Length: 114
Image 1 (cartoon, rainbow, N blue to C red):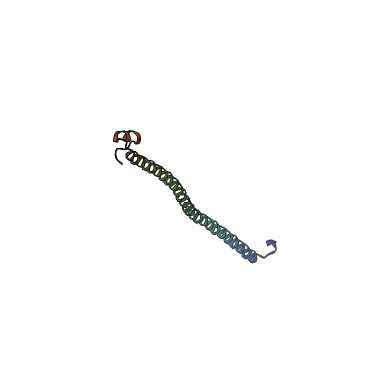
Image 2 (tube, rainbow, N blue to C red):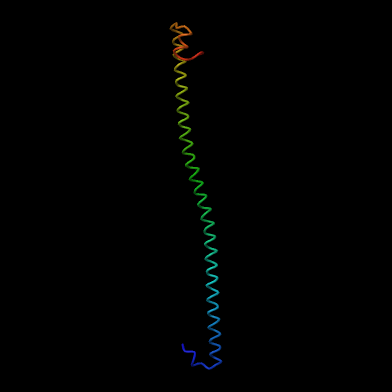
């Protein structure tokens, strides 16, 4: 569009309108960038919160798995110890019924009472 064909009044009106449009575009671009920045900041906060929640859930799950494994190991060890102790008591009682003396039973089983 050639603004040179306009008379002075129309050209001034045209130039003023053109300046207004450029100012509006600039203002819209500024608002858009502010909105993008605010959106990114909100997104970061939300993403961080979600990440923490997911991390906590995963940590709890891993902790539970480890706790169960440790508990099973301890339970097996305790069960084995109890089984060995019961076997020794039963052996000591059989030895008593077979007439073994107390000192011999203690040496063989390691028990001092049964």
